[in-house]
Amino acid sequence: MRTPIAAEPLAAALDRAYQAFEDVWRPRRIEASPYSAPADVAALIAVPLRDLTDEQIGAYAGSAMLTIGSGEDYNYFVPRILELAVSAPFWIGTEPERIAERLDMAGWRAWPAEQIAAIIEVFELAHALSEREDNEAWGNALITLKETRPPGSICYGPPKRILFVGSQDPIRSEAVKRVFAQRSDLAVKFADTDVSGPLTSEMVAWADIIFASEKYHRVRIKQRFRTALNTKRVVCLDVPKKHTSDETALVQLLQQKIGRFLPQLGGPAIK
Image (cartoon, rainbow, N blue to C red; front, side):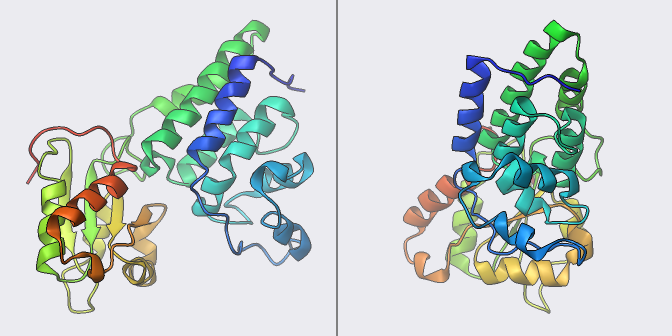
């Protein structure tokens, strides 16, 4: 049986993890196997995340993305799962190696930078404390989280290949290009979601992360390219056409929203 880990720095790191994930919306509905108890599934989203009991989040962690929920759901529950892993690590799905596997399944390498950093910090501190007990589980999991994936794999470090999807709109298109004009670390492609438009499954498969201008773009991408998406993250920036009359203001809005999901800025963009 694994021993609970307790230390003030780790407790503070868990608080920072909750803060890093506080903008993730609570799921409105969670898909689950017909063998799951509907009341137990509904209970997961009936109360604030921190108020979930160990029994509730522990049962979810063991079945996450296998018989219950999606990668987006896991994104919401991660802070509570990490808390359980260090305070009451007796549940299937709270083993460090298992959490690392589930994070990969959820496409965590395309999550916002502050979320990635918060996860790594918790693993590093838990690893440092577990070394006192000669427990290699956290260290092995940390190696998995930090390793670089080969090109073409589902998860490949921080986002490098960016696909921006929207409707044909000259002002918005120009604003997006200006946002990425100083990025030497990114390859960027642009497409629209019209049935006759240039967006293809090959483009979707190429991208590390996909930005959708509006909610209906995100819906259409998921409807048309479900297979190609696999665990890729599709981020809705919620920038409808009513915001496109002022290109400078639109650039500032896009920089603010896109910046949450990408590494630090670099130089001129990759063509």
